[in-house]
Image (cartoon, rainbow, N blue to C red):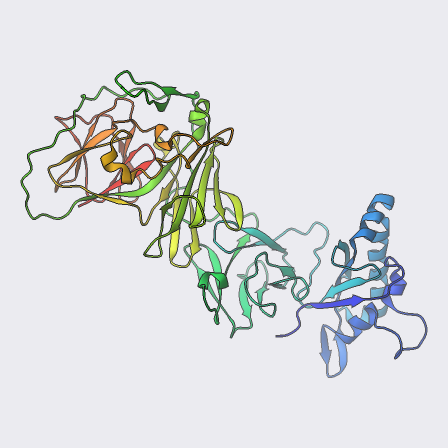
Length: 526
């Protein structure tokens, strides 16, 4: 691979701020002295014809011992650093003026903890660029190992043609956090101007493979000779145009404008409860027309060989905890782990979780992985493992005052729904507890950090609704006048809010569509 970044060390420097001492040693002892900055630039020209240099590099970065730079900032407000850069630029212009080809000479001086006292590190080359004062950024580059936590890599400017990113700054323009490949590998970014797309190439090509994931909007770089865990040899690289609107990575409209804040919530008691357990309900939620008090009925069903009906937990509706602030709820956390089919399914937080999502009492969403924690916006798509993706969908506008996002579950739990049998869904019905994956103390935390009783107390009644499966769809009856129910289609778009669903006139949810109650988005599959 060509040398895109020259990285050299000037040793035994008495005064690291002396431009003449760094540029060229006095006298004519050419073969006995150590090479200095002028010699390095002369020996490594930008272009040459035969052995004659026709053009030299004009952008140079110097790294001095960090203590020296700190002392200069404290004592002279950085005057010696500025004087050094200006003096070296003048010497560069004087000695190589005929080889610049109209390029502006630019020097940048910074401190580095890795530079030993009495040494100066020098970096220049085809992939070294210093922006002009006031030059605007054209692209920003970020990297991730899991598509959830993105860390900044570098910025690219309009006239910055080549940029090499890799393991460290010794052999690349910029280091990539968490670089999973060998030190010899690198990713070359070629910028041919604002009107041309940025080109991404991997080096060496026989060791790395690069493809663009159109759904995720990023490049996926993998090692061709990876052994063991394939995820250990994977890097995601996202290139964003500066000033451009964020690309939608998941189906759905842009996030709607949220309605005004509602009054705080309280634990609202119910009169007919023997155990005294309460459901947190927002005070501003106007009660819907009273539903008929429905006792659980088991219909007289005769077995017949029909298609198997089932209820699937298709998504989780992440609540806006600001509505329940007076309950002490501070954070709701959902952990997902790799399932049997390499998919992601809810698990208890711990070593088996691959990615976690957290909503706090400010209604902000965060993704948490082994790489750290980062705030995310919806819609968004994540691929923490190869072949295992997860999506956050925007909430339909009429539901946006209650929910922050819809977290799709490709491998959510299922519950058989025998035709002709009526079942009740709610906090107090253990028969369907397998669908209520948030009914655990570890999911909801109080402001003091302690675990709450159950996240289901936020918005899910003890007896929320009953259903009966049929060939036409799921027949729903509301059992609680304060339970909010929403009907979504197959694409998680709002069909209607279920305000009236009685025993005599149940609400029908067609096969393949969804019903939202509390945190749970349930799909009826016929």
